Length: 257
Ligand code: NAD
Image (cartoon, rainbow, N blue to C red):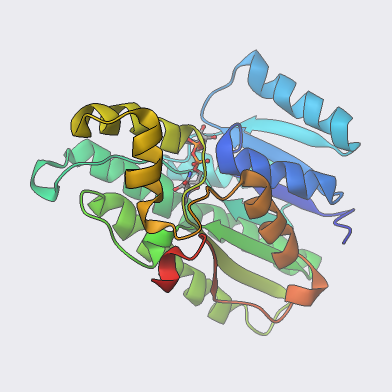
């Protein structure tokens, strides 16, 4: 599968799943635009290192996905966007009656509304190019719920719904829109939840991983960023040209329960 000649924009890609997806797209030959809200030397170095490793063009473009104008500017600055991966996301865990309003607003903005803005900006470019792929990184929480994650679950169910609508609006074109629904993947987002949970339940961090985090993941293994990236590359392939408006779970059986 070669993605040579395609430009991929991956939001929130200086760490975790976004970085893993960007790496697999670069490995498949795509030019890649990395993004986050920071603008550090190490962000640009990451792009330079990836370009050297895979022999493709890799740029880093700073844009804050909590701001609509930044989302649209990211796509404009990219100049081309054949593959759009909406990945940027944050988490906050609290009972709904104690959920901080600013956390709710930030989660909905970054995990859901950003994908509205980037997709709206990217679709005209895809139409002009006559080909496009939108890959939304949703979650098992786009299909099921957990307590204390109201904003995250609402945003992820929202992006699964938006995925279906974008697929219908592009159904007659060579453009597809799908959502990948990962179960737990060991990234900074998940690692940050381990110490607090260990303290809360008076458990070791190993016990938290086994008994709390992977409790709902029947495989009892984390999915890897490479596996999520490989799934995204598949969705960009010709074999996936008729796959649109759907979800692919990479969750070790979580949503089969
Ligand atoms: P992560 O914290 O490693 O990565 C999040 C990325 O988003 C980072 O690159 C961060 O810089 C970026 N980001 C955060 N706020 C941003 C903003 N305002 N503007 C631009 N970029 C911003 O987390 P991750 O686990 O890799 O999560 C990536 C996506 O995968 C999220 O949408 C998350 O909901 C989803 N997901 C993760 C898991 C998991 O188990 N890790 C499971 C299912 C879904």
